[in-house]
Length: 99
Image (cartoon, rainbow, N blue to C red; front, side, top):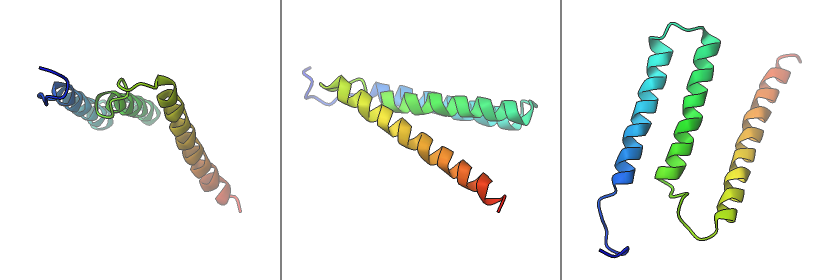
């Protein structure tokens, strides 16, 4: 078969089941683990970052394409924007309570 022929997307199925496993793992940690709240938040956040990277790799085809440098720059820019939005939101929420 050549590359233009459609085949079964096994990588998508694997990515889907890995995403489900990470989601159920986070739900288990949140509901059944009996850990301190701070630890639960760190574990869930770590699993979320892993799942985001997995989905970029498996579903968004980050491993394909000609220009790897442009893809890396786009990912770094997206991470920067996400950090600015989250940090800015936290800053506004905490500084608003003092006034």
